[in-house]
Image (cartoon, rainbow, N blue to C red):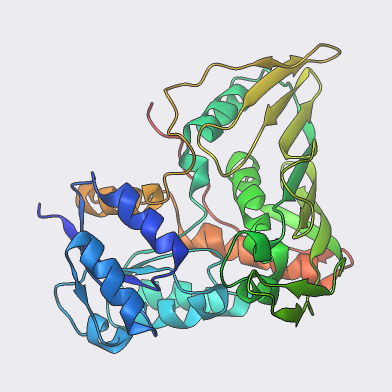
Length: 349
């Protein structure tokens, strides 16, 4: 079968990582790019030999495009994905799928109606460290797991991104909390309730160029999530504390021991196990890990599934369930989660 042809929408910083990590993949061929700032699409397309579309509509009208890769800012994800699905294209979107669960459900219905695939990041549960941690849990080394701690301290976007305002518009829960939530739901299945509390820690921020702006959404959120299997997780997210903290990654605690996944995003994150009352020791990876994050891995998995005519692992249903959890945390109180999804199968390593 010929490679699937993909067009990138949104040519910001992350698009370069997609292009770089897609280069060796034979299942997908990048054919073009589009951005509201056309020069960015031209620069990106030149880097992989594709074409720069003048508009998103022009890309959607091109029969040479099979998959839309939605890398726009978070507030535009739902609209761009909807337009791609409506045009009869498969869509792979960066996270979150949408900002409301109602929007997410509409996208699922549209994909089903048009018989196209919908896939959405985070896909980092496909990483070697994450699959290793999942194997340890599956093997029963922790016994009955009763709780988890997830800490996402991601620093201050104005220090690591040239357009930090977009991140504060959605806040750390929707931007980085999704990584831990996706790993937790992959391992434990759907959540059944959630509650949250948010605060603004530093209301005034300054860009690298010296421009001051106000933060209007919480830059610090703590949540409690209960899963259908009885596990309870505490999630902390913020855009204030940097990586110089000892509270990072995800800890899983069971009757027989504890497991630490040093980072839910990085494929070579530390994985350590400690028997109850003992010390943490490294767990060997189930295969040599990719250094960092292979951003295109979820897109490649989608292409493989389409070619092999099997279900894909990084599903829109899973992403929509995550959005419902995010909305529940936003509401505060003890909010019931109604949606579900079929948890993905582990990789065959």
